[in-house]
Length: 175
Image (cartoon, rainbow, N blue to C red):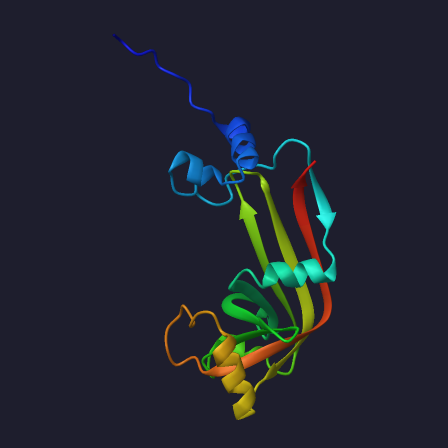
């Protein structure tokens, strides 16, 4: 007996099936995520503003974001491992590294998540003032709350926090 080939679901069909089963496309297909940035928004997608609380909840689920600071050579945006502690963004760096220059200045912090397969995602932007944490108890508290060490390696023991002035975010949702 010869089996007939069957069509495998793809694109929107696979997204709908994953959503109905409350799972991910990758879990259904058994494949790794596709290259980032090559997907498109799903049909009927819309941009929705997030509340301040939703922004903090989303930030608490991730650990890599970007710090934007003004340097003498111009605007610079750098990835950092971060954690959310007491309504601030906290990250550590090497005292001589570029992110350390953000201390005492106004800066921006952004984190996001994009699901290319489902055509949805979110982005949160914080604008505020960065400060170096020098109090030993404060440093210890941040180190205890950190979920991971810096991806860039050891020697990054200078903690900085960004106290938000504004918090905003948007989510792409399927209508």
